[in-house]
Amino acid sequence: MKPNLRIIYDRKKQATTAIPAVVQIEVYFRGKRKYVSTGVKVKSNEWDTENKRVKGSSNDFSSNYHISALWRKIDDFIIDCERNHEEFSFSKLHLALSEKVSSSLSFHEYYLDKLSKRKIAVSTFKKLMSLFSHVERFGKLKKFTDLTQSSLKEFDFYLSENGLCKNSIYDRHKQLKSFINEAVVDGYLKKSPYDGLKIQKGKSKDPVFLLESEIDTIKKYVPTEEKIGKVKDLYLFQCFTGLSYSDLAAFTREDVREIDRKKIIHSSRKKTDESFISLLLPDAETILVKYDYKLPIISNQKYNNYLKVLASNVGINKRLTTHTARHTFATYLLNRGISIVTVARTLGHSKISTTQHYAKMLGKTVIDEMSKLL
Picture 1 (tube, rainbow, N blue to C red):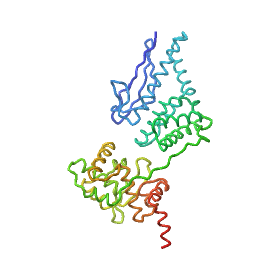
Picture 2 (cartoon, helix red, strand yellow):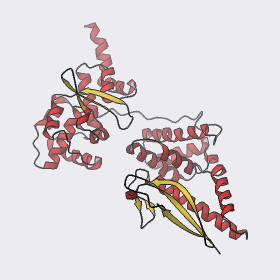
Picture 3 (cartoon, rainbow, N blue to C red):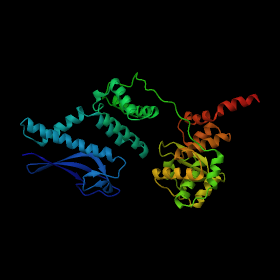
């Protein structure tokens, strides 16, 4: 008689939209049941009852991978018992699962386990899941023993063949290296295969930003569609605050405070948790008042799509994105003589070198130094 397997969610009927419950695999054999925990916990609105899978969660891919991986391990054990003409027992299953967890953990499983425990922004999570998709499709980095300099060089070539530019490839390696370094610390690898391996970084492109005349053009533009009008206001608000999209989406009235009778924006970046502070400029305040401090937020994808329409309507031949608004704010401040240290604080940059890139682009360092000759 062969054991039957089922995926069971919230066996104790305790889950709500606020309280998560565990996903288990039920093993039924000769009238007895054993419940094996997958380690995956989700809220009631994040579970697809019909398809027995996690949905609507930022780590749904990782969670579903964990569930299916455990199912395969149990099923493989049952098949091995049949093949070797051995009697199945729950005690043998428990021992087999314990041994596999300790000695046969794949790098794929390790990666997803580490990712599920990281406290990161949704955008960063998506990037790391994108990396995992590349690793999985490449297919030669499954086990820890697969992690060699030779395989990493092949992976580098694979990324290039799949259309990624040098900077994107460099970023993928940087992300992968962080997981491999953790594996070294955890004892799964003796040393990192990245030690002594040089990955070439491409030349950084200068950020796209708007001139003040182009900002004025947008300010004067009167849209005929309400949705484009809202996008115009959101974009201008970013140009005069330097907020990224995630910080814009999370913005509330509580982020505005008053110090010495001056209104300021003071909060922390959602991506890095780095604090930032900036004076609330009149143009930005006008937009806030217009919407009673409740900005008309739309999805990032729709926002960037509508920005293309806005650029076309006003006749600006530049690719407007949420990033260009942030770049515009940085150059706006630097052009007015605001120090790099202050600009870095307003943007929430954790490294001053990030802000210095804007100054180099504008030639500010050269001009400021040579001005001493006049």
